[in-house]
Length: 312
Image (cartoon, rainbow, N blue to C red; front, side):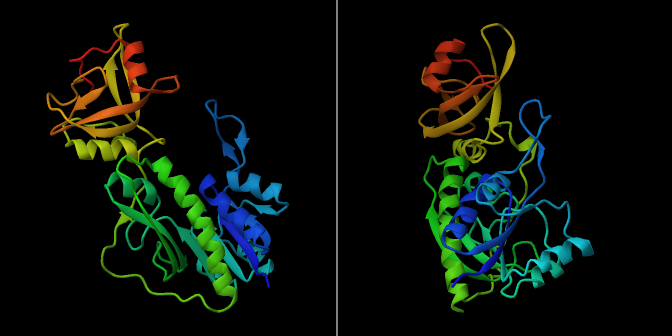
């Protein structure tokens, strides 16, 4: 048996789920995704989303409406005759007529342990908060923000130095497998939904640019969590005095906790150990403006950054 599925997603995170659903033999009758938008450094050429590229490679029709709130878009969705919609990081709110159209409802793959980290940036926020565990949940969508009952859960530990990028890739594959399992249970009438707890609710708001500059006066653990939580995108950063005499921005991609103390922001050794408000971190991967990601030792050598220099 197979289900008629409408898939709704946009970024790379959603691609393995789309591919896995198709590989499992379900009939994906359409893929909804965000319209092509300018991308790249120059930002001139409209670029299809990762989901659009994957859907086209699989021969799945692609729809890119700007909104699902008008009657025409809702009628077009209903005419697809989907038994279930699968939503993974789509980027548009689904109004009631869309939620109610599929016979078996709309399932959402969400990268957190709900009700913790409802909203737009659950992976970033979990790492930035220093959470030791996260996961993926498949929930049945309602009109609230990630408030629907949960049918399936897969839990993952978060390593001490793991970045958002590392965790994103693990959750991406875990979520794809979990959704395929959920669809199999749904098809057999065996997927049981449990309401979310009313306790422990938190919201993963979008990352603000003001959060990305590192405040070295914070404790080392908070600085470390901020660096790894913002890596690789949008990236935490600071500034240093380059050998040329100019002030240069430095993107901070990886770090680890280290021994040491001193003036916040002070470089303590040739291994790029940096003092924080309490304790210290060691930067292990950084990126200069316009350059590639490099190890800390290589950066120190090239930038001629001496012990005692202060990052700001």
